[in-house]
Length: 111
Length: 110
Image 1 (cartoon, each protein chain N blue to C red):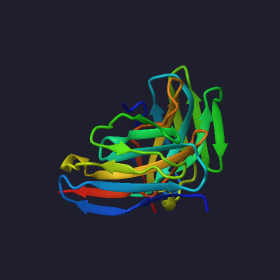
Image 2 (spheres, rainbow over the protein chains, first blue to last red; image 1 turned 90 degrees about the vertical axis):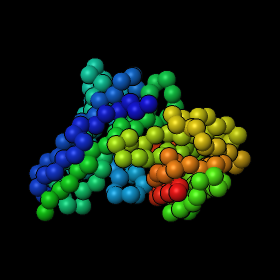
Image 3 (cartoon, one colour; image 1 turned 45 degrees about the vertical axis):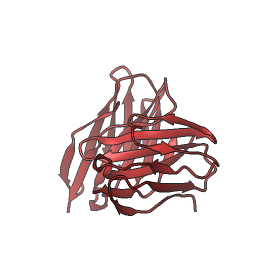
């Protein structure tokens, strides 16, 4: 069953703007990860945040985690056309050693 | 170069004709997994393997088999493919919890 739910399902913004995507999940987790997928290709790992962390940065990416609300957000600052892709959150539940993916957010950056 | 390699990338087959999609990783990862991706349903796990000779069902294992005879290879077997198995398939391997994905196999069963 899908644990992560991304919101929105699709997002279209202008180049240079910031893009924010949200993810909610249901069970307690070890960590939460964000992946990027270019159309029809494999997923690429972007960033991992552990359950005892609240915020993490990597280049133009900023991830937050609120375990009390069982939610996470991915912020991409100063977006570029090359950021156009689908973004997935994935959780590693405490009860299982596996990644559980959400349905993804389709991000389009308009030049 | 660290990578997960799937073959074939594209496959069109007929109902009932057994097929195997191969997956190989060169990172000495213990954990490997197969997913299918369908529009509106995201990625769903088919099978996973924690180590050689250890495999477990994921969320949608019906109609699929796997084997893990050696650490680097994790083939996905469809004994009797049906049209509802038309999908985009991904193999992944993991170190700790970060997963590395193959490029995908687009399977069409007619």
